[in-house]
Length: 168
Image (cartoon, rainbow, N blue to C red):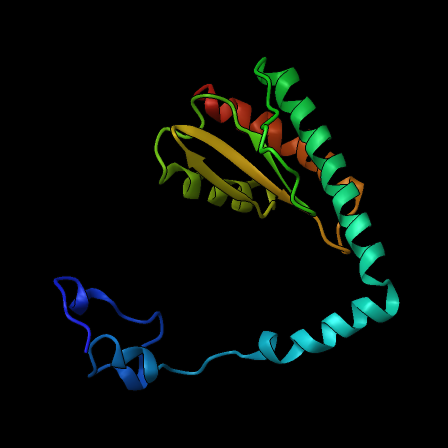
């Protein structure tokens, strides 16, 4: 049985049958869960292997992420006047980081606000975080992404974010 001062505050997003229970039992009796992604995972992995092959998939997504990083970094550097590259030591497949302009993320919770604005005002879904007072945009690539996705982000989202950082 779990104990501690925060035990009563830990609840599943959908409590349903678990309502009368406390942590951890409440997590064993949740409402309807959509397990479609779990059931479809094997089929999607097999489809990627059959249609493209994993080496081709990895090469495409890594190259596309590198292209996206370059395009977005250049846009931030040109508009904000700050170098946007991030040295992470080693690239990680289809994931890249771009440093955000100073002033955009005043606190860690600001990343959620910027993400929400990008989604609601500009229709971009992104991953944004802060570390040691610096904001970062995480770019990712998949088979459904194209170079145009990153170009559109650089053309529409980067100017908006630079404006938000300047208080506009």
